[in-house]
Image (cartoon, rainbow, N blue to C red):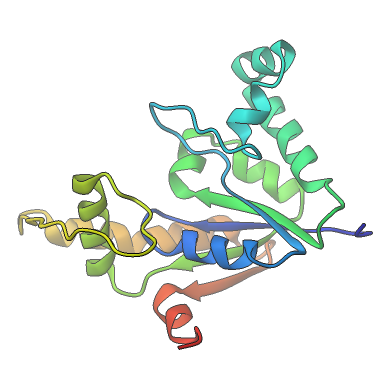
Length: 195
């Protein structure tokens, strides 16, 4: 059992490599990384160590998640980060999760988390990846998959690329000087992987 668990969070936006970083960290036996614990969407996210699952384990937790969502999220984070079975414990947090639940980032700052900011250097590849995933419905690929053809309208393209480039800046501003963080470029991480 570990005396003091390192609390971390992987931050980024969709299609920037956060899943690769999460998978890499999770492959270490002393690290627990829960994935997108606060994933939003029409279907409930059923990660056994995610917030949705946590908040539905009892009527009391379910009620608290509906009436007092900030306190419910705080209790989930307390439980996640108090697991002394790992040297480090964390999860993935997307910018969209923070926009939907503005209390999340302040709660994480109270835990003095260390952060890993994952971003993609090439905004065009991020845009293509997002549009491809949206069209195919396939968001995480391992192994072979069928190619999907997409068309990108040039009208609004510059604004879309600017928005993608701005996402990392938004995270940097949120992280500020008070949060210790590592800034990882997806492309550089890929280059460092064994052949």
